[in-house]
Length: 427
Image (cartoon, rainbow, N blue to C red; front, side, top):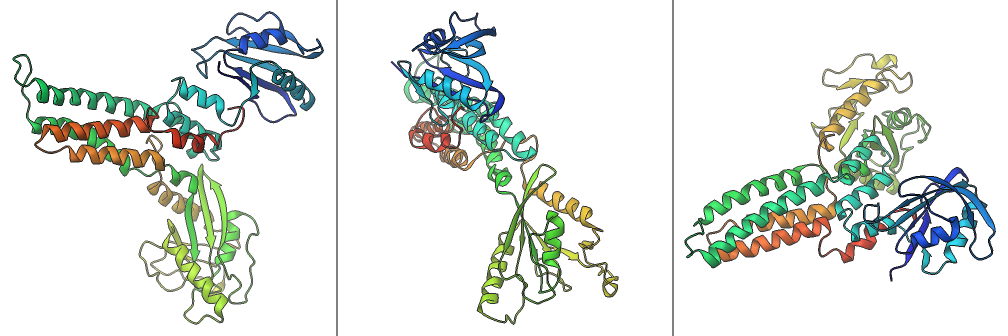
C-alpha cells in the first residue's frame, strides 16, 4: 500500500494559523484517530486533536476532509488548520509521524502525486513551480497561465489533431482498397499537418519564459568618468557603486537586480572604455565590459561620441553641469543623476525596450525543456511533408511522442526530480 504523506503546507511558524495536510490511503483513518469523528466532506468542523499514543491534547483545530479522486492530489486529503506556534506544529507532526503508514512528505510530493494521478500534467506542474518562485507581476501572470492549463490545452488540441491525421494515414496504408475508405493524397495530408506546424512554430518564435526570470540586461557603458556609477546608483536608489573623480575607479562589472513596473532588470555598471588602459587589471575590466555590452538587451551609452552600435541608447548624462547644458542632437535623452531630472523618462524608454523582448501579457510562454520537445515535434511534422505514407506515419508517431513528453505522459522519469526539487515541502 502506498504511504500516506503529511506536511505543513502553510508558511513557516510562528503564524496565526498553520495548515497541516495529509494525503493518501490512510489519511481519513489517521485523522480520525487524532481528531475523532470526521466532519462531512468539504465541511469545516472544530475538533480537539489528541495524540493517539497517550491521549494528550495537542490543539483545537478546524478539520476538513476531501475524498479522492476530486482533490488536489487525486487521493483522500485531510487538512488540519491548527494554531501556528512552533511547538503546536511540531507536536502535531510528531503525533502524525508515529502513526502506521505515515511519513513526512518530500519536496513537491503533493504536486507530484497530482501529476501521477492525472489531476494535472507536467506543464501545469512546471507552471506551479514558476508561480511559487515568481518575484514580479509579469512572472506571476506568465506562470499562472501555464499553471492553469494554458499550454496543456494547446498540447491536447494538437495531439487530438495529429491522432486524427494519423488515423487517416493508416487508413490509406491498410484500407485504401476498401470501398468505404476515402482516397487521400499525401498533399492533402500535408495541408492538414501544416496548420498544427504553423501554430507550434508561432509558439516557438515567442520569447521564452526564461527572459522573465533572468531579467532584462541593462548595461551602462562609456569612457572613464562619464557618470556610469552615478547613474547606476540613481537607477537603483541606493549606493551600490563607488563614485569618484579618479579615472578607472570601476575596475569590474557591478550587477544589481532591480524590479520595476512588474519587470525584472539586471543593471550592470562597467569599467570605463579606453584604448590606453593603465594596467592589466583595467584591461581585464574593459574586456569584461565589452562582453557585458555584447550580451545586453539595452545598452546605455554615456560617451560624448556616438555609440558604435545604432541600437545603443545614447544618454547625455550630467546635464546639471554648466559645460553640458547643450544637448547633442542625436541623444535619446538628457538627464542628471544628481538632481534626478530625466530619470523617470529614462526608465520609460528602458521599459519600452524591455517589453519588445519579453512575452506579451496574453502570450503563452515555454521553458527550455518544453521548447526542445516542441522543436522536435515541429521537426517531425516538417519531415512528414513527403509523398510517402510510410514515412508520414513514422514522423507522426515521432511528433505525437514529443507532445506526450511535453505533457508528461511519457519519457519524463529523468526530469521529474529536477522539476519538483524547486518545490517547498508542503507543496
